[in-house]
Image 1 (cartoon, helix red, strand yellow):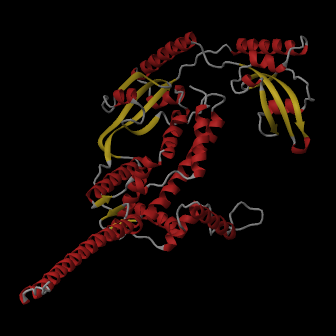
Image 2 (cartoon, one colour):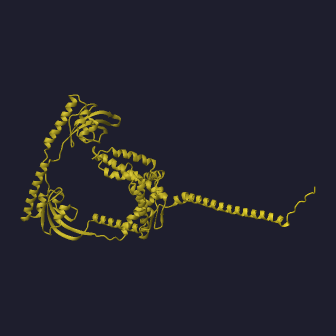
Image 3 (spheres, one colour):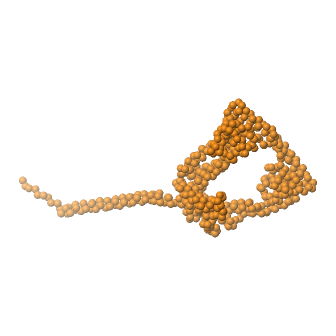
Amino acid sequence: MAKKTKEKKPEKLKHEQPRRYASRRRHEQEMQRRLYIALGVVLGAVLLLVAAGVINEYVIKPNKPVATVNGEKIAQEAFRHRLRFEQDNLVAQINNYLQFGEQFADGGPNPFISSIQPLYQQLSNPSDFAYTVVDRMVEEAVVRQLAKEHNATVSEEDVQSEIEKQFGFDPEAPEADGGNAMTEEEFKQRYNDYVKNMEEKGSLTEVEFRELFATFLMRNKLEETVQLDFDDTDEAVKVRYILIKPEPEVPLVKREADALKKITDARKRIVDDGESFADVAKEVSEDPGSAPNGGDLGCFGKGQMVPEFEEAAFALEKGEVSQPIKTDFGYHLIQIYDAKPDEEQICARHILARVDRSPDKEAIEKADEEALQEANAIKARIEAGEDFATVAKEVSDDAQTAENGGELGWVFRGEMGDDFDELAFSLEPGQIGGPTKLADGYAILLVEEKDPNHPVKDDELKQRRKQAFNDWLDAQVAAADVNNNLTPEMIPPLPADLQRLVNELGITLQQQPQP
C-alpha cells in the first residue's frame, strides 16, 4: 500500500493563527485593565464616602458651633457647660420655693406652686430648655460685641470685685475675731470649692464662669452709657387727702369664750373620759397642718414656738396634758410624748381651737356705712370753710399723712388705684372731691396743682430706662447676623443626678395639697 504523505498547510495560515491569539490576549488584558481601573474608582469612592462619614461624625459634627453671632462661634462644649449650669440654677430656685412654701403654707398648698411648675417643666425637658439657653448665649455674645463698640468693656479687677460681692466677701471689712465678716481665706476656699464643683459636674469652667460675670457687668455698663429714647415725664397731681377707715366690731369676747369651751371639752374627753389625745386631735383640732396626724408637731427646741406655747410645753412631763393655753392663734392643749434631753428638744402633740378675729358680713356693712357718713360730714365741714390740712390732722385715719395735713405730694396715675385716679385727675386745682371708696376706706381729696409733664420719680425713671434698654437690646439682637445651628443631636440627655431630682420633685409636687 502506498504511504500517505502529510499535507502541508499553507505558510500564510501558519502565521495568521498566532496573530489571532496575540490580538485576543491584548484585548483581554485591556478589558482586565479597564475592570481594575473601574474597581479602583469604585473602591476609592467607597473609601472616600466612608472617610467623609467618619470625618463628619467625629470631626465636623463635634466642632460645628451651636450658633454663630456676627461670625462669632458658640461652641458645642461651651453650650453643654452652660446648659448644665442653667439646669443647676433651676434646681436651686425650685428648692428655695419649696423651703419658703413650707414656712407659709400652714398645712395648705405651697403658695409658690405657680412659680415652681414652670421651672420644673424647664428642668424636665432639656430638649426645649436647650433652645432657651442658646438664645441667652446669643444675646450675651451681642452684649460683648456691643460693649466693644460702645467702649463699655470691663477689667479683670471689675470682674473679681463683682464675684467677691456675690460671694459675700468685702475686702474692706475688718476681720475681727468672732465677727461675722468673711475672711479672704474663707472667700478663696468657697470660690475654689464652687468652681471645682461646677467643673466636676460638667458645668462652667472657671474661665466661662468669670466671663459670665464680665458679660453681666458689660450689660449694666451699656445700660448706663447708651443713648436711649424714652419719656421721663408723666401727668401728675399734687394732692392732700383725708382717709376714713371703717372699723367693724368683732365679738371677740364671745368668740374667745366659744374657743375656750371647745378646748376645755376636748381636755375633758382626754383626761376624764380616757380618749386618745391623737383621736380627739384628728376630730376637733383646727390646725390643718397637724390635725390629720393626731396633732403631732414633731420634735422642737426652745425658740421655735411662740413664747406662751413654749413655756407651757417645756413645763410638762411626758404624757401630761396641759391646761388650755392662749396664744394669738387661739387656745391649745399640749401633750408631750417624748423628750430628748441631750438635744434639748421635746416632742409634742397639740389641739388648737382658733379664735376668729375677722368681722362678719353684717358688721362690715354697718362699719362701711358709718365711715361713709363720717366722710360726708367731714367734707361738709371743709366746704363750709374749715382748713383742709387742719381737719386732716384732726380726723384722718392715715397716720403717715395726717400729721402733715394729709399731704400726699405729687401723685402719678396708677400709684393709688383706679378709683383714686378717676377722681383726682378729674379735679382742677383748688377743687375738693369725694368721698371716693378706696381699698382701705373713704377718701376726700384736695387737688393743689396739676402738671401734664411732671418729672417721674427715681424708681419709675430707672424702670423706664431699663425697659427702653431691653427694647434697644432686643432690636440689636434681631438685627445681628445669627445662625442657630442647634439640633437635637447636640443636646445632651438629662444627667443621671438631675434625672433623679426630677423624679423626686415630680413626686413632691404631686403630693402637694390642692388649693
